Image (cartoon, rainbow, N blue to C red; front, side):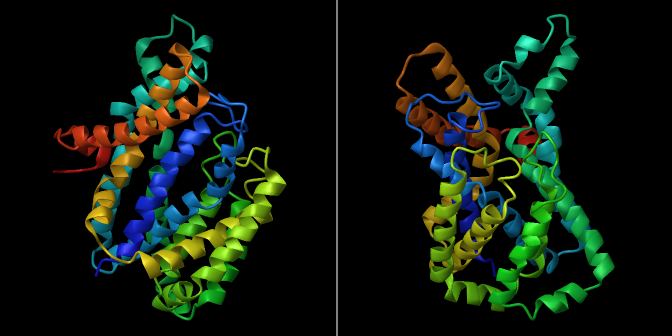
Length: 354
């Protein structure tokens, strides 16, 4: 039986990712590679501090959970094929097919073209554009790598970790925050700070081994409100302490307070959504079917609209936020609807065979 709350958490989180990227494009704190401030008021930046510590972590937890449920009904070879088609193909072949467009706007926004000589060969420029256009696809690249590592871990541990995880409850889930904190300190790539293999890898594995245990989920469902209140308190404190600092880099991104807030929020969201959103409806179904496409495509219309409006108009900053947000959401959905109807291209960009 499909667990609807997992799909619904993923769908809502992707909507938050879109909203986050709109705020991020015009933020006042982490301004590299984005347009930067367009308003004197910067209270909207608060949203970045409230989302960044947990929304990617929970996507990796969900990915680990889905891996467990898939492998219970399929072979490892089927798992490799499915994950490669869904994750690796869009984040590699898809980048070569479509990444240049995203790369163009990323480089235009960051003024990178000013440092590229006019004599650079076309094929070299194309590759530079593609690499620059990887964008949001870094997430599914990391998920594919972790999926392959999982298969190796399964062979080494021979089910012992699964037996141990069966004893887990809410206390175990809370204490796992210590492991999450420790993992946040390691395997973080320099410069490209989104590649945080340590914390995302640990989140993926806890999703696979711990959050697939019915006892854990039932207890999170039971205590969702205390967890949410604790998360809110930690989130407010974290935001007040670090507001104005670049939340996406060390030492702030992996500080004890950031990890504490992020982990409590993950537990609260899983428990709360299990209690109130473990159902299917036409609205949830609509979101579920389009969430992956929205994730893959939203940043291109977002960055194109933001760049065009900022460069060629004198609109008030608030309108730049609103119009860019509308472009990200509706433009991302439109691109998805177009691409999924084109054979070959839909496989390259979305991993869809039909």
